[in-house]
Image (cartoon, rainbow, N blue to C red; front, side, top):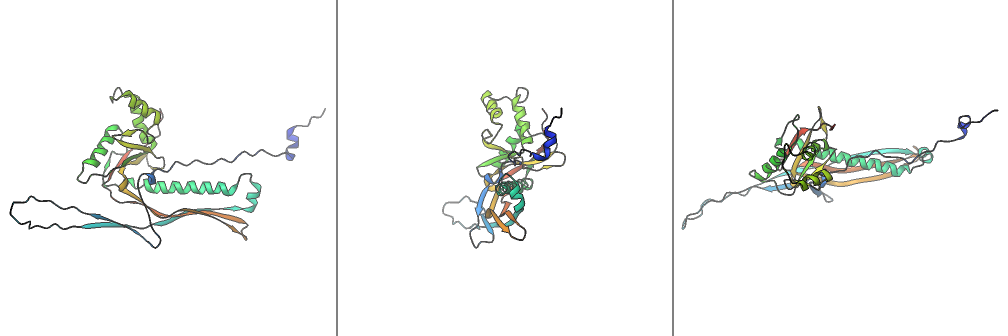
Length: 286
């Protein structure tokens, strides 16, 4: 007796299409930890003046103050540049796709812009005036303490607030050490539990400084990465305009151009207000 199977009628059935999924991008960290300046209409650059210091001298009673001090000022000028991306969604594709393609495209290009801005910022870490560690060194609490101490103990202390921003692989070395502290670190059990529970997600602090992890930090050759401790005043996010999206239909192309453009600059304002942390960023295996 003949039996009709699903394979015999495959041409008459269709595959079920699930809801579209997206590639997840890491959250932006950098611009949330630095100064922000939005340029007004008509401004082409942003100038940051900085006053120098003077010296106060001891005086003798009845003797005229003869020496006058010179008040000096220096400054830096920052300009912005455009960055953007676009995709083209044809009318045929839109009609054949079950998901709202325009909405999906907007989410994808928005995520891509956020990643670029965060990478642009984190690549500035290596340009700080001073650094600790070397590529083959494992990050440890002692380096964190040294970085904070150097920043607040130098001739011009780095202004608060400050932040640690570390690649997750670099941060894991400290989390791992705190997880089994007996041989190396002596610490309160409550602190140990808080670290392990929150994994330093901007909640627990080291030396009074909040700690954030950012997987947008580039990993160099041989699994080394520049993380950083820095003052909010060390860097500036200069904004010409925030990311702006558009959608335009092209009749001859029979499709929509969907794009995003931003005009901005991630710049270093004072390289002495932080410390680059150049340490191993190898993916943990245990």
